[in-house]
Length: 513
Image (cartoon, rainbow, N blue to C red; front, side, top):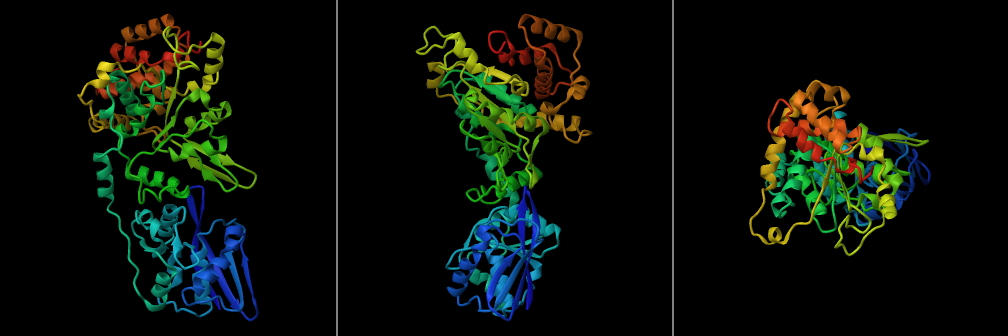
């Protein structure tokens, strides 16, 4: 008897339906074909034990299982439940009171029949709805994540017995539903890290607000203990709330990487990723034998924080140049090509010198000019070229640390940032890939960053006096456009230009030359 049951394979961040054909014939043997990897080949042991412990068995017949399309590589243990249900129906041990063909069935089996979570539940659910399946049966740990997709019945199950009873005895399964508005609202009103916790540092908070409003990459330079990491961690709390499409896109990536289990359901807050400086190229941009998204893709629609930037391997920093420009990363190998989205805000921090204290006569550790040059040369010009704002962070004085007054909360700052972003969305409505100021190209800068004569003269004087490099010119214009947007000003004035000039520390002589 031939039975068809449906599963799904995730490739990149998209899912493809897999048809599992189970044929039972006279003879003895268990044959699994269709390019399965070792985890799938071992599934017959898990399936046999799980069925036996629930009153069923793999009968002594010739069973052939084909995973179509047969030329696509299948990986992972998530097909256990798919294969088990196909065997049970094909061998006549259970009836199909509900047609198997109407459901995508996925789950890893334990030996007692309980189900372990799978990866990629959200892209699988989206694909199932698009292809007209009625429902999706999967482990209960992943059910909340898949239930985000409307128009698809999502059934979270804890044991294979529940699935057997559903098809064999028509015992209904619980349908999982998610209240999206409640999920979003709860996080927006209670950010985990709030700017009100930061004492002093008003100028740096202002700088962070500008970076958030225009989506600008930013680098913080300052001695140890000046608050660089504390400020960076609070940046996601002032970014505009995720839209539904952004939340789905972000959750898809985390789902494929198997990172949504601890959060459950949709990602309601912008991701914050902070990889260690020993990270490899592949771990940062993605790839591997079985391709997985890297840190830059896990930071999609959020913040990638590189703490102590010069300590990262130069090769690791160089591979970020193209994703920073193109907002996605394409991994090409002999056997596959896969593209992951990677539109993130880069926040980097560094000490001004190897010892941490630059030009400080009272410093406990000083560095020679040669050590300084070697340290700073690790950051290449082309990478620095993609960072719009450079700001020096100074230690907080004691009287600021000890005062009880709380600073401005993230929610208040976020309101101003969101207003500025709305202006930019309207401005760039005709451009498909431009949504905020940091994404402007030369053409848009010339169109939307026009200066009057006094402002132009101010910029010229600053560039000559401070020896600012040519790369600083466009960056200053972009940042001044954002400062003007925060004030809802149509024109860029000298005040906006003079503030933007302050945020180019590393372009001046005495830093990177």
